[in-house]
Length: 154
Figure (spheres, rainbow, N blue to C red):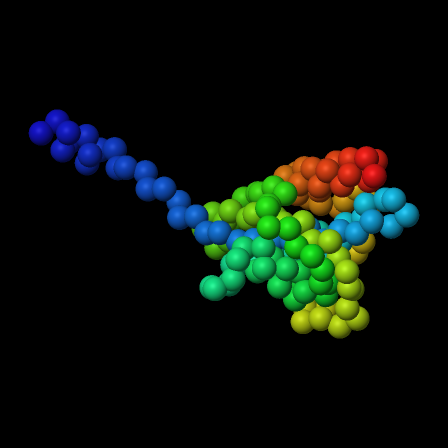
Protein backbone atom coordinates (compact mmCIF):
# COMPACT_ATOMS: atom_id res chain seq x y z
CA UNK A 1 0.00 0.00 0.00
CA UNK A 2 2.80 2.41 0.83
CA UNK A 3 4.38 1.64 -2.54
CA UNK A 4 1.12 2.48 -4.30
CA UNK A 5 0.91 5.81 -2.49
CA UNK A 6 4.52 6.64 -3.31
CA UNK A 7 3.91 5.88 -6.99
CA UNK A 8 1.05 8.35 -6.99
CA UNK A 9 3.13 11.09 -5.36
CA UNK A 10 6.38 10.55 -7.25
CA UNK A 11 5.76 9.76 -10.86
CA UNK A 12 8.55 7.86 -12.49
CA UNK A 13 10.76 9.74 -14.86
CA UNK A 14 10.57 8.29 -18.32
CA UNK A 15 13.83 8.21 -20.26
CA UNK A 16 13.97 10.62 -23.17
CA UNK A 17 13.84 8.69 -26.43
CA UNK A 18 17.15 8.79 -28.25
CA UNK A 19 17.60 8.89 -32.02
CA UNK A 20 20.79 7.94 -33.88
CA UNK A 21 22.34 9.89 -36.71
CA UNK A 22 25.69 9.87 -38.43
CA UNK A 23 27.90 12.68 -39.59
CA UNK A 24 31.05 13.12 -41.62
CA UNK A 25 34.11 15.22 -40.88
CA UNK A 26 35.43 15.97 -44.38
CA UNK A 27 39.16 16.67 -44.50
CA UNK A 28 42.15 16.74 -46.79
CA UNK A 29 45.85 17.44 -46.42
CA UNK A 30 47.37 20.35 -48.35
CA UNK A 31 51.12 20.99 -48.16
CA UNK A 32 51.31 18.84 -45.03
CA UNK A 33 48.51 20.74 -43.28
CA UNK A 34 45.18 19.20 -42.34
CA UNK A 35 42.14 21.20 -43.44
CA UNK A 36 38.50 20.51 -42.57
CA UNK A 37 35.33 21.31 -44.48
CA UNK A 38 32.50 22.87 -42.47
CA UNK A 39 28.96 23.63 -43.61
CA UNK A 40 26.29 25.90 -42.21
CA UNK A 41 23.18 24.52 -40.57
CA UNK A 42 20.04 25.28 -42.57
CA UNK A 43 18.10 26.09 -39.41
CA UNK A 44 20.55 28.26 -37.44
CA UNK A 45 23.33 29.14 -39.87
CA UNK A 46 25.94 27.88 -37.39
CA UNK A 47 29.01 26.03 -38.65
CA UNK A 48 28.72 22.24 -38.28
CA UNK A 49 29.80 18.96 -39.88
CA UNK A 50 27.46 17.35 -42.43
CA UNK A 51 25.09 14.96 -40.64
CA UNK A 52 21.72 13.30 -40.95
CA UNK A 53 19.55 10.29 -40.29
CA UNK A 54 20.97 6.85 -40.94
CA UNK A 55 19.31 5.59 -44.09
CA UNK A 56 17.63 2.18 -43.88
CA UNK A 57 19.79 -0.48 -45.49
CA UNK A 58 22.95 1.63 -45.30
CA UNK A 59 25.78 1.52 -42.79
CA UNK A 60 26.12 4.60 -40.56
CA UNK A 61 29.36 5.58 -42.31
CA UNK A 62 27.86 5.24 -45.80
CA UNK A 63 24.93 7.39 -44.65
CA UNK A 64 27.46 9.95 -43.37
CA UNK A 65 29.22 9.96 -46.75
CA UNK A 66 25.87 10.49 -48.50
CA UNK A 67 25.12 13.44 -46.20
CA UNK A 68 28.54 14.94 -47.00
CA UNK A 69 27.70 14.84 -50.70
CA UNK A 70 24.20 16.28 -50.20
CA UNK A 71 25.19 19.01 -47.73
CA UNK A 72 28.79 19.86 -48.72
CA UNK A 73 29.22 18.53 -52.25
CA UNK A 74 32.20 16.32 -51.47
CA UNK A 75 32.99 12.66 -52.01
CA UNK A 76 35.89 10.57 -50.86
CA UNK A 77 36.92 7.71 -48.64
CA UNK A 78 34.91 7.36 -45.43
CA UNK A 79 36.23 5.61 -42.34
CA UNK A 80 34.12 2.86 -40.80
CA UNK A 81 35.07 3.77 -37.21
CA UNK A 82 33.68 6.99 -35.70
CA UNK A 83 36.24 9.61 -34.74
CA UNK A 84 33.88 10.80 -32.00
CA UNK A 85 30.26 11.43 -31.14
CA UNK A 86 28.08 14.18 -29.75
CA UNK A 87 24.49 14.83 -28.74
CA UNK A 88 22.00 17.27 -30.13
CA UNK A 89 18.29 17.82 -29.67
CA UNK A 90 15.78 17.81 -32.46
CA UNK A 91 12.14 18.66 -31.78
CA UNK A 92 12.42 17.56 -28.16
CA UNK A 93 14.18 14.27 -28.89
CA UNK A 94 17.76 13.57 -27.94
CA UNK A 95 19.94 12.69 -30.96
CA UNK A 96 23.22 10.76 -30.68
CA UNK A 97 25.49 11.51 -33.64
CA UNK A 98 28.55 9.43 -34.53
CA UNK A 99 31.07 11.29 -36.71
CA UNK A 100 33.16 9.46 -39.30
CA UNK A 101 36.30 10.84 -40.97
CA UNK A 102 35.92 11.46 -44.72
CA UNK A 103 39.09 12.00 -46.75
CA UNK A 104 37.88 14.19 -49.59
CA UNK A 105 38.87 13.15 -53.11
CA UNK A 106 36.47 15.33 -55.10
CA UNK A 107 34.83 18.67 -54.37
CA UNK A 108 31.87 18.99 -56.74
CA UNK A 109 30.81 22.30 -58.27
CA UNK A 110 27.12 21.53 -57.76
CA UNK A 111 25.34 19.54 -55.06
CA UNK A 112 21.85 19.07 -53.65
CA UNK A 113 21.91 21.71 -50.90
CA UNK A 114 24.24 24.27 -52.48
CA UNK A 115 21.54 26.96 -52.36
CA UNK A 116 20.75 26.23 -48.69
CA UNK A 117 24.21 26.08 -47.08
CA UNK A 118 27.66 27.58 -47.19
CA UNK A 119 30.77 25.41 -47.17
CA UNK A 120 34.17 26.55 -45.96
CA UNK A 121 37.61 24.89 -45.72
CA UNK A 122 39.41 25.71 -42.47
CA UNK A 123 42.58 24.93 -40.57
CA UNK A 124 42.12 23.68 -37.01
CA UNK A 125 42.59 27.16 -35.49
CA UNK A 126 39.72 28.57 -37.55
CA UNK A 127 37.56 25.50 -36.84
CA UNK A 128 38.01 26.25 -33.13
CA UNK A 129 36.65 29.77 -33.70
CA UNK A 130 33.77 28.86 -36.00
CA UNK A 131 32.36 25.73 -34.37
CA UNK A 132 29.96 26.80 -31.62
CA UNK A 133 29.67 23.28 -30.19
CA UNK A 134 32.71 22.44 -28.06
CA UNK A 135 32.28 18.72 -28.72
CA UNK A 136 32.63 19.32 -32.47
CA UNK A 137 35.89 21.15 -31.77
CA UNK A 138 37.12 18.18 -29.73
CA UNK A 139 36.26 15.79 -32.58
CA UNK A 140 38.18 17.97 -35.06
CA UNK A 141 41.13 18.11 -32.64
CA UNK A 142 41.11 14.31 -32.27
CA UNK A 143 41.20 13.75 -36.03
CA UNK A 144 43.84 16.46 -36.47
CA UNK A 145 46.04 14.82 -33.84
CA UNK A 146 45.71 11.39 -35.46
CA UNK A 147 46.42 12.69 -38.95
CA UNK A 148 49.41 14.82 -37.96
CA UNK A 149 50.92 11.85 -36.10
CA UNK A 150 50.65 9.81 -39.30
CA UNK A 151 52.13 12.64 -41.38
CA UNK A 152 54.98 13.06 -38.91
CA UNK A 153 55.77 9.33 -38.86
CA UNK A 154 55.82 9.04 -42.68
